[in-house]
Length: 69
Image (cartoon, rainbow, N blue to C red):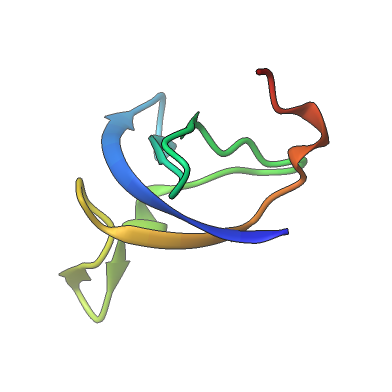
């Protein structure tokens, strides 16, 4: 299911990895987790400009079967 989140948190992890968290439209907090790999600093930039930062809207293809309510 494709959905957008409003990014509220962006955290530097080990090495080049980053973690983001945010809210879906229905005010549900999410932290996208990938089956393989994950987000790296490279995902945050396009043409040397920051494109993902707090308050950015990012679209993901979520598998919400593991959502905890």
